Length: 174
Length: 346
Image (cartoon, rainbow over all chains, first blue to last red):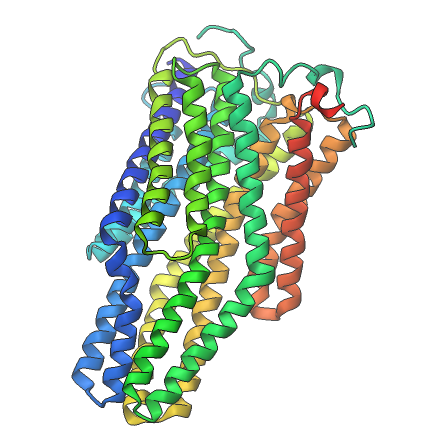
């Protein structure tokens, strides 16, 4: 394989994910922001109902606002994590540029990174869509993949510094 | 600083050799990053304590009113709470958006220093990314979150960012992309590179631990506290309701601040990697460059630790965290000055 191709693929995927994340966040904020801003009103409604000794309404409004708060928090987390993880991917792609990857047939750490960056926010979004357990499993798996990738790069930076110094110079063709 | 000879011979023309779009992304990105950090400092030092105290007082007022069954007054008080919460959200949003957009612009600039111009829309794409980040972040200054003007302004910024980033994808496609060497371990950036990667990794690891604690312990505890709060209000037991509210709110605040220590560790780790990769483009003497890098590294490592300690051991740690943030800002300012062309510095 050409070593530059791997890093370029990481960059492209990071940018595509970034665009997809931004587009979905913009759509979400345009179409769902007002209902989520009403979370506080549900809080108010629950307290008013409780003060009026309406146990049923207070309980249902409390559950309603709790679920809305949870969904909103997970979606905001998905948006924020996607943005940061894409920047993380771009930077680590540059750190890996010119670095030898394992050969064909072995596990490529690039795939760990891309899968993790894809799975973690997707898991959070799934949790926001009431697929709680599946979303948690997806997020946890994504987090472990990202950590494995980042850990591998960090270990490489500390223990194999000469490889970093021997990366291709300007203008060297791949 | 401008009076002293600040450039190393090896980096004299490095910045000038960059394309206009790369320079725009570098300087615009660093300015956005600095703007985000300054907004964070302003929020932490001047706004958060006052707004949080106002919010706490408003909530306690609601609980008092609920004890007296004054239903209409409760509804009116909630409008005030909504207003205060929105104000707090605006300033936080400037901080949380401008910083990552700055990181993104700088990261894209660095890809260009290694890949050259990316396609025919190189300069327009850079303009769209920097201006889009600026417009979206500035959109949060508009006072009312729900106005059409805010939505249009803010979404215009996002659309500009989307188009700008989209222009980069085709430019990365050609198979003949050429990469420049990364700073080796002997370069000034080598240590910062390794330190930044370590900090980002530690921040991610801590985030995984926080997510586990959040889902399995803190969220169920908050849910239970909320139910107990409603029960106390229904019984008209104002004092118990206030006590439960105090526990509920302090748990929420501790969770939010602890999450901030995770996000700042990752963000500062990435900032350190970016600063290290900029080493070859800085027109600074070794002394100034090492000073800038030391400030960024010291602030980057200390801030998440102090942020984590602040809700547990008091305000002195919050002040230390603010001081650590100021170190990063100072380091980035020196880095930014190092990017100014020689003629402009004289």
